[in-house]
Image (cartoon, rainbow, N blue to C red; front, side, top):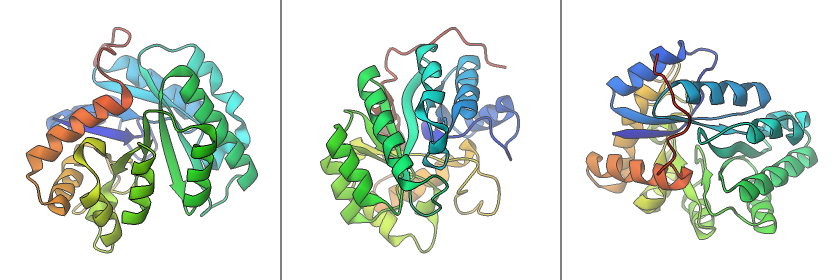
Length: 261
């Protein structure tokens, strides 16, 4: 089955989580990592992970919300169990600059430290900030399990990230006509370092562009990756399932008892 390494459940524009997760299962998506972006969204992600089998959560502070302070999310990390598998998404976004850049950099460094201290995966968001993102990771010490989510760089950026030992996660952008650089990055990324994601409800893949994205659309991303790499879709399905398990340390993480709605 497929594993969606990065989605946002619950979230605006999406149906109730039980509906979204059932549709994902029907489409062959058996694992979902739902991502925190601030204290409220992280708490909601954790609650969904507690309710549903095959769903895990991260706790993080998005660069847009860096002004909230990393202290706002720390209690969630202290009061959760195996349902939490990562810190983030966190990083730098110099496209919108919703938080001042110095505040973004400080919050990113703090969350790198949290991931390292707690032995959790680090989920990185970077937009128009490659040099600073990679410099901060080098300075702070890249966690052993780090993933660049919604990878939007080309082959050069991919090599720099892979040289850090990171995973690359590709979204519906890989299906877009103008995304040759992203497909080039996917082509060179080793399968054991490559993940797929929806980033739902954003970035719906072709042929669903213009609609709210959902984890059920993940196979379209996987098919585009297979085409870019010149391999069969089944190979990408199997390798990304295993890579998601390795990146987020899912083996043996049963989490708290959960009840599927």
